[in-house]
Amino acid sequence: MRSLGVKALCFSGDKKIGEVSVLGKGCVGIVISAYTDAGKVALKIRRTDADRESMRREAEMLKIANSVNVGPRLLGFTRNILLMEFIEGMPLAGWIEKIRCERDSAERIRRVLREILEQCRRLDEVGLDHGELSRATGHVIVDHKDTPWILDFETASVKRRVSNVTSICQFLFLRGSLASLITESIGCKAEEDLILALRRYKRSLSRRAFNEVLRKCGLVD
Image (tube, rainbow, N blue to C red; front, side):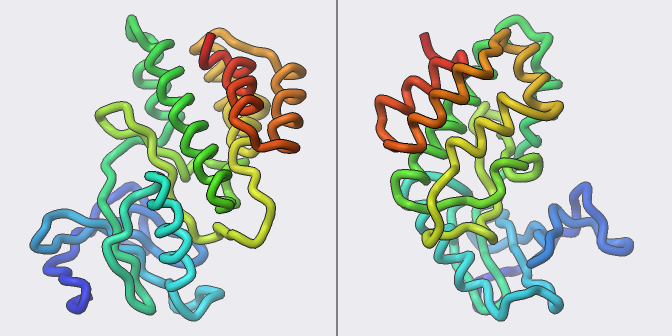
Protein backbone atom coordinates (compact mmCIF):
# COMPACT_ATOMS: atom_id res chain seq x y z
CA MET A 1 0.00 0.00 0.00
CA ARG A 2 2.87 2.39 0.75
CA SER A 3 4.26 1.81 -2.74
CA LEU A 4 0.91 2.97 -4.16
CA GLY A 5 0.90 6.10 -2.03
CA VAL A 6 -1.86 5.01 0.35
CA LYS A 7 -1.89 7.16 3.48
CA ALA A 8 -4.98 5.91 5.32
CA LEU A 9 -7.75 3.31 5.10
CA CYS A 10 -11.46 3.92 5.63
CA PHE A 11 -13.61 1.01 6.74
CA SER A 12 -17.12 1.88 5.59
CA GLY A 13 -19.76 0.40 3.33
CA ASP A 14 -22.81 -1.85 3.45
CA LYS A 15 -20.88 -5.15 3.32
CA LYS A 16 -19.33 -6.81 6.37
CA ILE A 17 -16.33 -9.04 6.96
CA GLY A 18 -16.75 -10.00 10.59
CA GLU A 19 -17.26 -6.65 12.28
CA VAL A 20 -15.41 -4.68 9.59
CA SER A 21 -17.41 -2.65 7.05
CA VAL A 22 -16.21 -2.74 3.44
CA LEU A 23 -17.43 -1.43 0.09
CA GLY A 24 -17.57 -4.84 -1.54
CA LYS A 25 -16.43 -8.44 -1.33
CA GLY A 26 -16.14 -11.22 -3.87
CA CYS A 27 -14.36 -14.46 -4.62
CA VAL A 28 -11.14 -12.68 -5.56
CA GLY A 29 -10.92 -9.65 -3.31
CA ILE A 30 -12.44 -7.14 -0.95
CA VAL A 31 -12.90 -3.46 -1.80
CA ILE A 32 -12.30 -0.70 0.71
CA SER A 33 -11.90 3.05 0.46
CA ALA A 34 -8.58 4.70 1.20
CA TYR A 35 -6.79 8.04 0.91
CA THR A 36 -3.72 9.15 -1.00
CA ASP A 37 -2.29 12.65 -1.37
CA ALA A 38 -4.62 13.03 -4.38
CA GLY A 39 -7.74 12.22 -2.35
CA LYS A 40 -10.13 9.34 -1.88
CA VAL A 41 -9.55 6.12 -3.83
CA ALA A 42 -10.79 2.53 -3.90
CA LEU A 43 -8.55 -0.43 -3.09
CA LYS A 44 -9.28 -3.97 -4.20
CA ILE A 45 -7.22 -6.34 -2.07
CA ARG A 46 -6.66 -9.93 -3.16
CA ARG A 47 -8.03 -12.55 -0.79
CA THR A 48 -5.58 -15.14 0.52
CA ASP A 49 -7.91 -17.89 -0.73
CA ALA A 50 -8.40 -16.34 -4.20
CA ASP A 51 -8.04 -18.62 -7.22
CA ARG A 52 -5.33 -16.42 -8.75
CA GLU A 53 -1.82 -15.48 -7.75
CA SER A 54 -1.90 -11.83 -8.73
CA MET A 55 -4.12 -8.86 -9.52
CA ARG A 56 -2.13 -8.14 -12.69
CA ARG A 57 -4.61 -9.72 -15.11
CA GLU A 58 -7.57 -7.78 -13.69
CA ALA A 59 -5.50 -4.59 -13.89
CA GLU A 60 -4.82 -5.31 -17.57
CA MET A 61 -8.52 -5.89 -18.26
CA LEU A 62 -9.48 -2.66 -16.48
CA LYS A 63 -6.83 -0.78 -18.45
CA ILE A 64 -8.43 -1.97 -21.70
CA ALA A 65 -11.87 -0.87 -20.45
CA ASN A 66 -10.42 2.52 -19.49
CA SER A 67 -9.08 2.90 -23.03
CA VAL A 68 -12.70 3.28 -24.22
CA ASN A 69 -13.81 5.31 -21.18
CA VAL A 70 -15.45 2.46 -19.30
CA GLY A 71 -14.99 1.61 -15.63
CA PRO A 72 -13.27 3.40 -12.74
CA ARG A 73 -9.83 4.66 -13.70
CA LEU A 74 -6.94 2.34 -12.82
CA LEU A 75 -4.44 4.35 -10.77
CA GLY A 76 -1.91 1.62 -10.02
CA PHE A 77 -1.51 -1.97 -8.91
CA THR A 78 0.75 -4.43 -7.14
CA ARG A 79 0.63 -8.20 -6.94
CA ASN A 80 -2.10 -8.05 -4.29
CA ILE A 81 -3.80 -4.67 -4.75
CA LEU A 82 -5.63 -2.63 -7.37
CA LEU A 83 -5.72 1.13 -6.80
CA MET A 84 -8.72 2.69 -8.57
CA GLU A 85 -10.72 5.86 -8.87
CA PHE A 86 -13.36 6.02 -6.12
CA ILE A 87 -16.90 6.14 -7.52
CA GLU A 88 -19.71 7.17 -5.21
CA GLY A 89 -23.02 5.86 -6.46
CA MET A 90 -26.08 3.70 -6.04
CA PRO A 91 -26.85 0.30 -7.56
CA LEU A 92 -28.90 0.80 -10.71
CA ALA A 93 -32.06 -0.79 -9.28
CA GLY A 94 -31.93 1.40 -6.16
CA TRP A 95 -31.37 4.52 -8.26
CA ILE A 96 -34.40 3.74 -10.45
CA GLU A 97 -36.57 3.10 -7.39
CA LYS A 98 -35.41 6.40 -5.88
CA ILE A 99 -36.22 8.61 -8.87
CA ARG A 100 -39.05 6.79 -10.66
CA CYS A 101 -41.82 8.95 -9.18
CA GLU A 102 -40.11 12.22 -10.07
CA ARG A 103 -41.48 14.31 -12.94
CA ASP A 104 -38.72 13.67 -15.51
CA SER A 105 -37.77 10.19 -14.31
CA ALA A 106 -38.60 8.28 -17.51
CA GLU A 107 -36.25 10.38 -19.64
CA ARG A 108 -33.49 10.28 -17.01
CA ILE A 109 -33.77 6.49 -16.85
CA ARG A 110 -33.66 6.23 -20.64
CA ARG A 111 -30.51 8.38 -20.77
CA VAL A 112 -28.76 6.23 -18.17
CA LEU A 113 -29.79 2.95 -19.83
CA ARG A 114 -28.68 4.26 -23.23
CA GLU A 115 -25.27 5.18 -21.79
CA ILE A 116 -24.93 1.73 -20.20
CA LEU A 117 -25.57 0.12 -23.59
CA GLU A 118 -23.14 2.53 -25.27
CA GLN A 119 -20.44 1.54 -22.77
CA CYS A 120 -21.14 -2.13 -23.45
CA ARG A 121 -20.93 -1.42 -27.18
CA ARG A 122 -17.47 0.13 -26.71
CA LEU A 123 -16.33 -2.93 -24.76
CA ASP A 124 -17.57 -5.10 -27.63
CA GLU A 125 -15.62 -2.98 -30.09
CA VAL A 126 -12.30 -3.51 -28.27
CA GLY A 127 -12.96 -7.24 -27.80
CA LEU A 128 -13.25 -7.19 -23.99
CA ASP A 129 -16.04 -9.33 -22.56
CA HIS A 130 -16.98 -8.34 -19.01
CA GLY A 131 -18.37 -11.77 -18.20
CA GLU A 132 -20.90 -10.82 -15.50
CA LEU A 133 -23.38 -8.51 -17.21
CA SER A 134 -26.18 -11.06 -17.58
CA ARG A 135 -26.41 -10.84 -13.77
CA ALA A 136 -25.15 -7.32 -13.29
CA THR A 137 -26.86 -6.47 -9.99
CA GLY A 138 -23.61 -5.47 -8.28
CA HIS A 139 -21.74 -4.39 -11.38
CA VAL A 140 -23.53 -1.20 -12.45
CA ILE A 141 -23.92 1.90 -10.28
CA VAL A 142 -25.17 5.42 -11.00
CA ASP A 143 -23.48 8.50 -9.51
CA HIS A 144 -25.00 11.83 -8.43
CA LYS A 145 -24.63 13.22 -11.97
CA ASP A 146 -26.74 10.37 -13.41
CA THR A 147 -23.62 8.81 -14.91
CA PRO A 148 -23.59 5.00 -14.93
CA TRP A 149 -20.42 3.03 -14.17
CA ILE A 150 -19.63 -0.58 -15.00
CA LEU A 151 -17.54 -2.13 -12.24
CA ASP A 152 -15.53 -5.25 -11.45
CA PHE A 153 -13.53 -6.68 -14.33
CA GLU A 154 -12.14 -9.67 -12.42
CA THR A 155 -13.72 -12.22 -14.78
CA ALA A 156 -13.27 -10.12 -17.94
CA SER A 157 -11.52 -11.67 -20.92
CA VAL A 158 -10.24 -10.82 -24.39
CA LYS A 159 -10.13 -14.50 -25.32
CA ARG A 160 -13.84 -15.28 -25.54
CA ARG A 161 -16.46 -13.88 -27.87
CA VAL A 162 -17.85 -10.59 -26.61
CA SER A 163 -21.45 -10.51 -25.40
CA ASN A 164 -21.63 -7.30 -23.39
CA VAL A 165 -24.56 -5.71 -25.24
CA THR A 166 -26.57 -8.93 -25.47
CA SER A 167 -25.90 -9.81 -21.81
CA ILE A 168 -26.83 -6.41 -20.41
CA CYS A 169 -30.00 -6.27 -22.53
CA GLN A 170 -31.09 -9.63 -21.17
CA PHE A 171 -30.54 -8.33 -17.65
CA LEU A 172 -32.17 -4.93 -18.15
CA PHE A 173 -35.06 -5.72 -20.48
CA LEU A 174 -35.82 -9.42 -20.79
CA ARG A 175 -35.83 -11.17 -17.45
CA GLY A 176 -35.91 -10.64 -13.72
CA SER A 177 -37.25 -8.04 -11.32
CA LEU A 178 -35.13 -5.20 -12.67
CA ALA A 179 -36.46 -5.78 -16.19
CA SER A 180 -40.00 -5.52 -14.82
CA LEU A 181 -39.12 -2.33 -12.94
CA ILE A 182 -37.61 -0.78 -16.07
CA THR A 183 -40.64 -1.73 -18.16
CA GLU A 184 -42.91 -0.04 -15.61
CA SER A 185 -40.66 3.03 -15.46
CA ILE A 186 -40.19 3.78 -19.16
CA GLY A 187 -43.24 2.04 -20.60
CA CYS A 188 -41.55 -0.12 -23.20
CA LYS A 189 -41.87 -3.88 -23.64
CA ALA A 190 -40.99 -5.54 -26.95
CA GLU A 191 -39.34 -8.82 -26.05
CA GLU A 192 -39.62 -10.69 -29.35
CA ASP A 193 -38.49 -7.72 -31.46
CA LEU A 194 -35.59 -7.06 -29.09
CA ILE A 195 -34.45 -10.70 -29.18
CA LEU A 196 -34.39 -10.59 -32.99
CA ALA A 197 -32.47 -7.30 -32.94
CA LEU A 198 -29.93 -8.73 -30.51
CA ARG A 199 -29.41 -11.76 -32.74
CA ARG A 200 -28.70 -9.49 -35.69
CA TYR A 201 -26.33 -7.40 -33.61
CA LYS A 202 -24.50 -10.48 -32.31
CA ARG A 203 -23.87 -11.63 -35.89
CA SER A 204 -22.52 -8.33 -37.19
CA LEU A 205 -21.58 -6.17 -34.16
CA SER A 206 -22.34 -3.24 -36.47
CA ARG A 207 -23.37 0.25 -35.40
CA ARG A 208 -26.51 -0.05 -37.52
CA ALA A 209 -27.56 -3.25 -35.74
CA PHE A 210 -26.76 -1.65 -32.37
CA ASN A 211 -28.96 1.36 -33.17
CA GLU A 212 -31.79 -1.04 -33.88
CA VAL A 213 -31.26 -2.62 -30.45
CA LEU A 214 -31.54 0.86 -28.89
CA ARG A 215 -34.82 1.40 -30.73
CA LYS A 216 -36.29 -1.92 -29.65
CA CYS A 217 -35.34 -1.09 -26.04
CA GLY A 218 -37.27 2.17 -26.34
CA LEU A 219 -34.16 4.28 -25.78
CA VAL A 220 -34.17 6.23 -29.05
CA ASP A 221 -36.93 7.25 -31.46
